[in-house]
Amino acid sequence: MNKIIVQKYGGSSVADIDRVKKVAEKIVERAKEGNRVVVVVSAMGKTTDELIKMAGKITSSPNERELDMLISTGEQVSIALLTMAIHSLGREAISFTGMQAGIVTNAVHTKAKVTAINHKKLKSALEKGKIVIVAGFQGIDANGDITTLGRGGSDTTAIALAAQLEADGCEIYTDVDGVYTADPRIVRTARRIPVISYDEMAEMASLGARVMHYRAIDLARNYKVKILVKSSFVPGEGTLIKEVDPMLERVIVRGVTQEINVGKIVVQGVPDVPGVAYKLFKALAEEEIIVDMIIQSSHRNEINDIAFTVAISDFNKTIKITKRLAEKIGAEGVISEPEVAKVSIVGAGITSDPAIAARMFGALAKEGINIDMISTSGIRISCLISASRIEDAVRAIHKEFNLDKAGEEK
Ligand code: ASP
Ligand code: MG
View 1: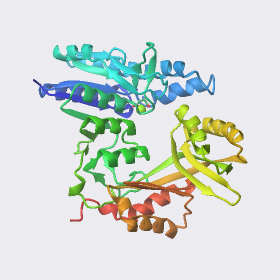
View 2: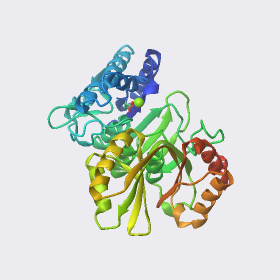
View 3: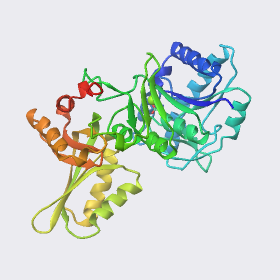
View 4: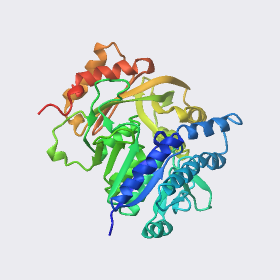
């Protein structure tokens, strides 16, 4: 049997017709090597942003079913054009929307999760020797309504298909040639990371490394799909994301990330009784709002403050819900702060070495950057700081851990 290769091309890789033609050539090359090729493609360039902007000119809170109906159209344009471009190179190819590819999701519009893939149609096209082009980012729920998987969701489509088809390789083509020790636009000396574990990559992605959608990495880890992230513009080795045996690794800071689209909310004067945090965070969870850093600090007189952060896209909604809940639980008030940002370091085992946290805080202190909140996981340390200092913070920390020499030292 020929190998099955799943490739994904992001919006920048198909931003205009010339690029669509170039991508078609790359796909045909891969097919000529004797592979069965499934390609997931995003909407061209900034199409999705433009569609969202159009909706915004009509209403600030569009109906989410209709928003999905609108933004899923971007990918339908790119699959058709890419398929035509492959045809004109003399190869057989066929395009499928999410529905046609059998991608079934739950009914949570704008952030749906894939629940099943009925890939019969897709498999049979592959068996007929056709290159299959699938619209990323979209699926269909049990009602037959179009859903989308959240911004950047084409990665998830690619991983889900690779898992389901038991593909031999999953290649993600984007506008950077791999994952870097920091955003190269902020740190000029940032270096490409050749191999990274799923855990580290998932953290980096959820913390703002824009290379891949973090949910796609979770999915890849669950199904052990190895991912090669490469540039669609320049040749290079890229970054391989896979299981890395922690025994072979010494504790190492892998990279620094920043997240700027963060908002902070503080519920002040919360009565110190059981069930209060439960009520608040349950209400937010019901609205699918992802709460990030949470800090509860206690005061005199049996009251607490609870501070937490959310993505800025959920900020207004979160404030509304929190204010409603604050009244219910008898809190004194709610304050919110949109101008915050999160800087993090990621690396397997870094929290087991206390010196690493100390060095990170020291690097910030030396720059005169105040830390507002701190949170850690097994492989991550994050600090919330003022958004205006985020670039200084990333550079200072990158330097502190000698990441500009990453991979060179023996
Ligand atoms: N076109 C969608 C977006 O811009 C999905 C994707 O690019 O992966 O978010
Ligand atoms: Mg995109």
